Every structure is written in structure tokens, then in C-alpha cells.
Image (cartoon, rainbow, N blue to C red; front, side, top):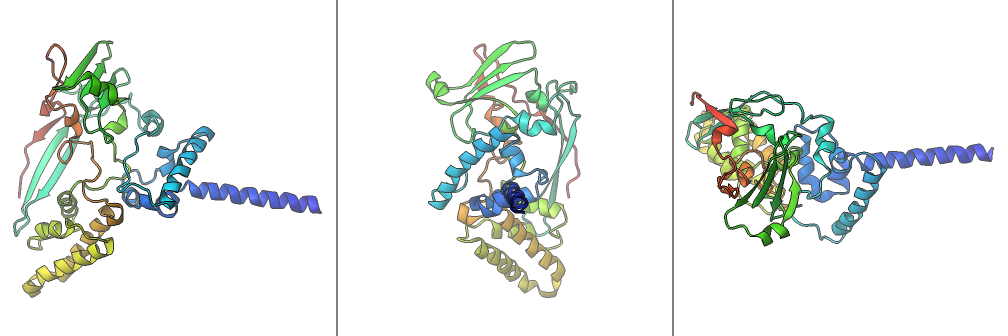
Length: 357
């Protein structure tokens, strides 16, 4: 009868609406359909350690309130897309949900961690692509896991400790003021030299959490072309037997090409042109693999239309390619009694002896 037909149509409509809403929360929708400017983040997310975590799990969260709030924010962003007012590159998120809600579903700040070994493999620009190995004992630590250095890295995440800071730039790379309340309730304030009370009052005051260090963990753009090529050689995706491959790979990846398609073409043509005079001395299979790997690195990290390229987003883990740890641990943040925020290298890691080749 008509009532049964109406009921089936209503059920069908509800199912389609639910399916549409579910699709709109998928990473492919965020990265490819609606948020075209987010393609760099989508490409980086696909091979990141958090690639099985959907965008909405971090950027929206659970519950109707979060859904409504961020969909309303999305309306403004959609208007910017339609009117071509999207900033290029897309700035990092300034108002992420609390880290305990995002990261806390899988990671527990109350749980400490033992020391970890980090091996960094780098290659020279000489003919044999000479390798240098750096091995670091990372003193991660945390609650219940003291290290020889005492507090160690994850002391910052101890729930008994409260750290607030003031940043004077949008990317939170300049931090002139830090306030620490330790597990015993003792408070100490640190300021960088020349900081004024006016700067502190006008800056962004924030309580430190996971994303202040792990800020690009879900979609990392490689900080440098050098780092990307080194990692590819170390992983065996580019053969070290190709003379000068490290130098040539970096040389072809670094220029600013007007379009990604042109960059991909230049990478292939440039490598073939360089090795052509060597003829049969070059293994063609290794050369083809190197070309494809370099093209993948370029496609994964460089998006000219969005002005995204190597190092455009600061990575706060470490302190080699951006300020990172040195935003506070630079030896220039002092309390009133002259005490400095610890800047000793071995406070967080120790270098181990390694063979180089």
C-alpha cells in the first residue's frame, strides 16, 4: 500500500543521507573531492605512520557538537575555495582538538617508554655516494621510566607536570616565555633575552601537549630534498652503485618548477641526460628505478599550485631542519634567578659510535 511504499522510500532516503555523510567524512573526500587544496596533506598522509587514522578522527572528533562545529567551519573554508581565497600553502591547524582527545585513544601519557635507537644514514655528493651513519640513543623516558639523564624527552608529557608557553607567531616557532609547574607544584618562569611584557600579553598563550612537538606526524612533507634522497638510498629504493646519484637526485628535485607535471618530466630527462655519456657502465634497471623513485619523491612532496615544497611546514621533532626543540632549549631562556632551560645535548640523546663507509 501507499504507507508501505512511503516507508520504504523514507528508509532509502535515510540510508542514502547516512551514506553521503559517511563519505563526506572519508579521507578521500577531504583530500580529493571537496578540499582540493588539501592534496599535499592527503598525499603525505597516505604513506605516513597514521595512514589508518581517518582525517576526521583528529580534525573533527566524536559527537554531534564536534560535527556541527567543524562543518560550520567547513562552510567558511568552502567559500574560500569557491572564491579562490585559499592561502597558499595551507597553514597548519591553529585550533586542533585537545591532544588527549586525539592522541589519547591510542597513546597514554601516563605510560613511560624505554630508550629508543635512532639511526640516521646520510650520503655525500661524491662519486661513490659515501655513507655517514649517526646512531643516537634517544632518552624518551616518561612517568615511571626514569633514564640516566633524569627527566628525558617525555617528561614534557607527564600528567603531573604543567607547561604553558607564549608564542608570538602563527606557526609557534618563536617562544619567548615558558612557565613550568612541576610534579611538586613548584613554579618557574623563563623568558628569552629582550622579551617585553607587552610581547607576552599579545602572544598566544597555550598549554603544551603532544602536537607541540609531534606537529606533522600525520602528514609530513620532507624538510629537505637531501633528507628525502638519503632516506630513499638508505631504504634501497635508489642504488648507491649509480655514480653521483645522491648529488644529481637532489639537484633535480630542488628547483621550483611552475607545474608538478613539468617537474616530473625534468627529473626524468635530467637523470637520463646525465648518465647517457656513461653508456653500458650504467645498469639500466637501477637507472629506471632511480628515476621512478625520484619522481615519486617529487610527486609526494612538491605541489607548485599550492606553493608546497621541501621544508614549507616546520617539523618540531628534533632541531636539524627547523628550530624544534631549540624553540625553548636554546640556552637563552632564563628564570629570574639565572637558571636556564636545560640545553644539554645529552639531556635527550646520546651519540653512539658507528662505522662510516
